Image 1 (cartoon, one colour):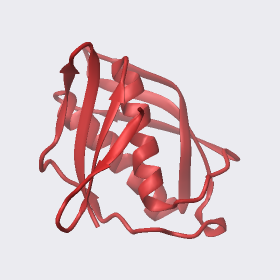
Image 2 (cartoon, one colour):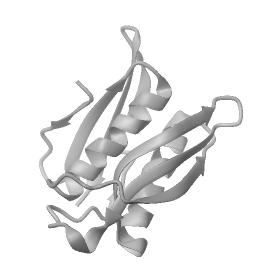
Image 3 (tube, one colour):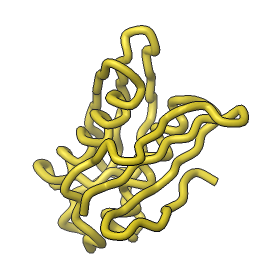
Image 4 (tube, helix red, strand yellow):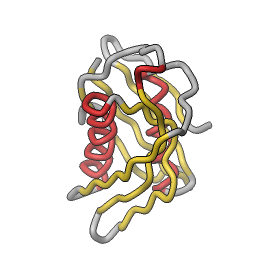
Length: 136
């Protein structure tokens, strides 16, 4: 399982899984993209993405906010991320985000922001787990 949506009273909440830290970030991108549009997004265009943080939670938050920036300001709907690298000492992330123009797809929901509410990112039982609530 890459991710699952969890019940939440007003917002969207998901938990993502991965064998590595990079994989859990990548699967979190898939969850975020699935919450914006239920359609399969074609990987027609590429955008370089980078984020940094002071700990894993802020790196995760900043990464997801960067994705929302591309959705809201560039009308770029992501479908996948490749060459994702996380420098664990410097807490910096780089990757190649693939997606397409949002005007080609039906919008399922509008995400206003990422929150720190109920956020986790840690190793559990030999795998990485990330959880976040998205304000809709």
